[in-house]
Amino acid sequence: MTKYLKVNPSVQKASRTAFGETLVHMGEKHPEIVVLDADLSVSTKSAGFAKKFPDRFFHMGIAEANMIGTAAGLALSGKTPFLCSFGCFVAGRFETIRISIAYNQVNARIMGTHAGLGIGEDGYTQMALEDIALMRSLPGMGVLQPGDPVETRKMIEYLSSHHKGPVYVRLTRQNLVSLFSEDYEFEYGKGVVLKEGKDIALLATGGVVYNSYVASQTLEKEGISSTVINIHTLKPIEEELIVHTAKSHKRLVTVEDHNIIGGLGSAVSEVLAENGIGTPLLRIGVEDIYGESGTAENLYEKYGLSINKIYEKTLQFFQESNRPGR
Amino acid sequence: MWEDRDRFVLSKGHGCPILYAAMAKSGYFPEEEIYTLRKINSRLQGHPDHVRFPFIETSSGSLGQGLSVAQGMAIAAKLNHKKYKIYCLLGDGEIQEGQIWETAMSAPKFQLDNLVAIIDANQGQIDGHTRDVMDLAPLKKKWEAFNWDVQEINGHEFHEILTALDKAQLERKKPHMIIANTVKGKGVSFMEDNIEWHGVAPTPEQRDKAIKELNDKVLKG
Image (cartoon, rainbow over all chains, first blue to last red; front, side):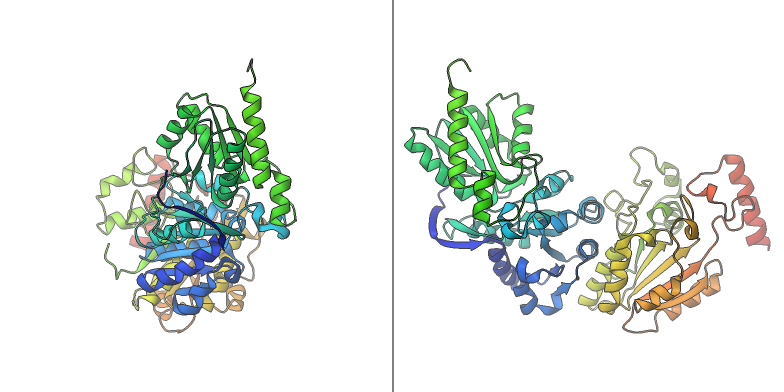
């Protein structure tokens, strides 16, 4: 279990906000950082960098493909570009990312904000629900999704100073409960165990990690002992941890604000199948359908990502699959 | 590669055989390696590959992207107070891609006078002549309207090419566009302006005939 766990529901911040704040600090330390935005800098929170470093910030207008290609050219010239838009708009320019950024293997950081149902009232057209699937399919592309504001900060610090190669980072519009202490250390590619149990393990990513954690605590009251693991790196997925967890638990559940096809649920399924592990898996997420308008809370309740729904689905899954004769 | 070099981005990546040939002749790699073109395990991919072959400035071939990448390089040069230029060769069919017009809009905004784009205006694309598939006219007016410094030349006349490249250094605060009017298969009687030759390799006999015609015209003419 991580020694950095410090869940504090009274401290909340959106991961996009933590990103924007960290980017300003990193801009001071790293002159090679440049930032591009496609007319959403107020929303993606890159506006803070724009104000502090106007010479290293580029308004690209409502033209994401050009932003992606330009970022590639900057990276090929030794810069570390952070290119920002809503996740659906930037990942939607897949072909440009595929060739200009991924195939070139440049140090670009693609920031996709307003991930998943969490965007709320804007509705499906602005809602990234397939971005992880797209980005995961590109060889050499790291796919990251922080679960709280502290992890976001540490992740951005790491991406500003150390990481080589292209990365897609998925951030939330909505506030996230602070899960970690300030001295949290981010380890690329490593899952973070928040809670240890023995019956069932919940593997969660992004904005639903906290909900999974609380749902897990409620399961204890039903006598079900559960583990919770925060998967901030969706690619490369930590195979060893998943294999170990699958072997040491009776059931697995993945939780993500994304289509269950191509996201965390798929990544975990692939690891299980390739390792010949038959531990039953429930994939909680958006079940291959389009989203809609509503508050994030209403949507999470309707589509099964609220604390209550994660609890109910997990409990039902555990009880059904534990019935005699199954 | 040395940092202060000029950059050449072949956005019309399908033209890479001639780029490879020019690079081999310039000493980037041994000429015999040319014969690995498009073969398994070769650095000389069917379309340019920056990772396998880092002398290539960027991977290209998925059309419409190179001008954006060249723009990024031009911005980086400005940020670093470097004097080098970025040259980007586009196909005329290629500029039907929407991303080209995003960059057409942005490069003048950033005042990238260190960016020189060239359109190989050969009026041919896979499905036919550009005028039939998706007309580009009025080509010069379009780029002028987007506030580029535009020149139009005969792309087969070396003195016109060199003069245009020199003139492209003069105008400040604007990116440069050279529309080079060309004829596909120029100088080879059975290839000239014949769309059927788009993306087709000649047989050894056709190759020898073509080389003889070119030698007769260019070297002796």
